[in-house]
Length: 412
Length: 144
Image 1 (cartoon, rainbow over the protein chains, first blue to last red):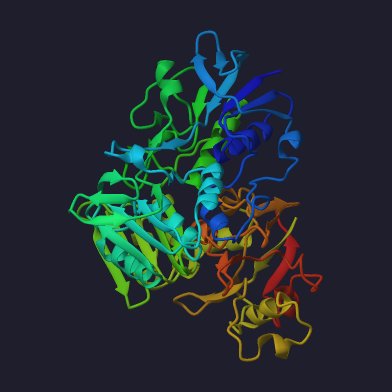
Image 2 (image 1 turned 180 degrees about the horizontal axis):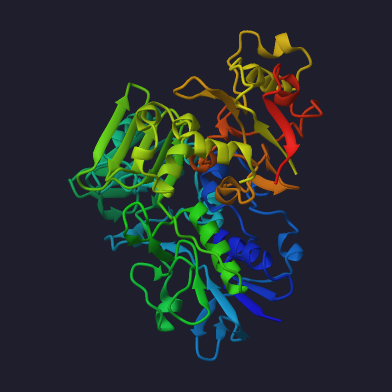
């Protein structure tokens, strides 16, 4: 009987469990979970603050998930060390845990750059975990002035979650625009205006230089008063276990399309990894929940002796604020052609290079967008489809009769 | 399992399937009350290609559904082959809309996602689009 061990208990781990069990019903599976919670939907912590979900509904799987899959979860324990030669893990409790196949799903941690006087701030929080959200919820009152450092996905979702529960929300970022990792200037501007209309204020192109208790002194000299501080500057992949064991690590743990590290029988999946984005060809961190699941599942199948590959990964994000949605996928390469359509309430920008759709940004009108995503993922030659029609509206009608017959007349 | 398939040679492009879908999923028993003067958000959509051929597109109930793998709320699942959405869990992030290659998951007009569930959760008893198609252009059958 094979012994499978998974370090981490997020969505990549859940995918890994389901991947293993799709091949091997008998092997033992042990999950090492530093967090004291069963797998939950991490991106839902902002919806929790917004009261659009609750702790029970945030569970990613049914309460019987671990029992149904014959999984032992070691809650509140950490993996301290991997010994790839002895094939065993040392736990924070001192025990050793042997494995035949291991998957590292350690995720990422908030990155807090050195900022002067941060220790003088009484109420400061990260916004990564359920426990962060619960602590933040306890700290805020209707009179709280909140300062969020970081106008990325995490900072802005936190702002939306707190909206209506606090007196004011200001967001600062060193970048000159909001959501700088996924939106270009044009799209970011529309999203920022929308957020401002809902009372979120921004200080962009500057960040906090120094904190003095309830006061932040910005790089541009401005002073911002606050009661609660949220640090959402960025995240770092948790790579130390694999690095210390001798595995190849750059910004993330390097994995191939089978989700193998370069250490024998050690796999990795989720936000701790870096892997190939087929839309740009770059090896990078794509810390996205869908990809985490797909990597975890792929790793699980391969760990159990099956064959699986996640070989069409792309970055993609579906995110919305106060009713205005945004879909982005792929990349915007140098020298690409841009097809744009815009009015006051929506923008569509499609990026085309070398007869392929490489990426897009859409704000406002989210209808059948996945047809575009599939063009990127499948690297479909645009000369083989009616792109003039597709540009106007995503539709199978523009994909050709053969594709349509395959998709609509058979089991796929 | 039985799935919905289209016979484009018989499709009239009448869009009745869209109305029947919206009605079946409205929870109401009077079609006029359910649809009159309302914008509909059907889970099946009629398309027309450049040569004028029409056909309806709805969830394919894929063997390996990317929407289920991508759902950030754990709201999509596969039960006995049917891809279902748990509206209690869905938070309306629309990741499923972003990943469905067939454009078969759509926003329901109130901000959350919806998709064809083969009329397993409504009073129709059988897929309403199939039952109501006047020209037999949508079928519900087992195919290999």
